[in-house]
Length: 275
Image 1 (cartoon, one colour):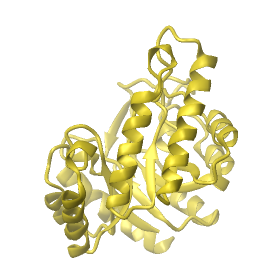
Image 2 (image 1 turned 135 degrees about the vertical axis):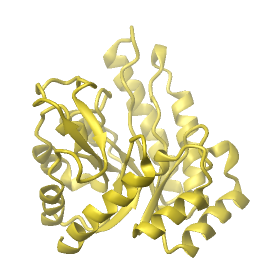
Image 3 (image 1 turned 60 degrees about the vertical axis):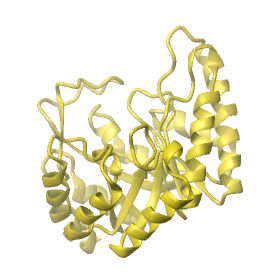
Image 4 (image 1 turned 180 degrees about the vertical axis):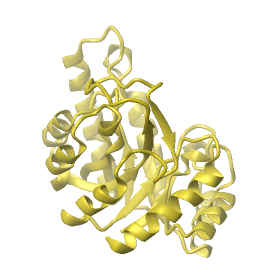
């Protein structure tokens, strides 16, 4: 496995500057976000900008392992047009960057919306996005996410199987289950046949989670990898045991990402060598 890093930790910062930090710390890959305000947002990442990003990564020995385009898929009235448009434009960015994986998540159910109608709209919109991604040679990786339409492994499997696109797969982030006190090991086993990418996050828990479907934000403090309560070594061993040998992408939402990315690499790189 290779240690990657999510650029979401540095909104608005030049990617070459971020790449310098990662290369110095020993990372091997970077996941580029296309959110508003980030350098790879579709409105500001044309052919020349993408070429510069590719060159900057290559010069530092970094693989651009994925493009991340999380969005809320279903708006009021069951409309998915904005999400589909953003995802397709992000797919074009991924294509320019020479990347094979595009990450997404469903977002929550919109308020005052029939949930069955929202599900049908989500399925139709994501099918359109998966087909467009396939035409560019991309795998669309759906991340089960806390508070989202597809949060549980059951809902994620249901959507992936109903759509049935061979290029619709799963990005697994165990922390979404861990912070709720749910069984992330079982979730990984259930989703393993669709696993295409992995995020790593760590949290310090003040109390044992309640096993409820809504987390308590005051209970889970984001930390550098290895500084919280999540059993990273065990999780990496589980990934190895099911045959995963791709990128594990560190996702850090902490006050001091510079220190956290260094600390995370110091902790995780030896574990990856063992794995």
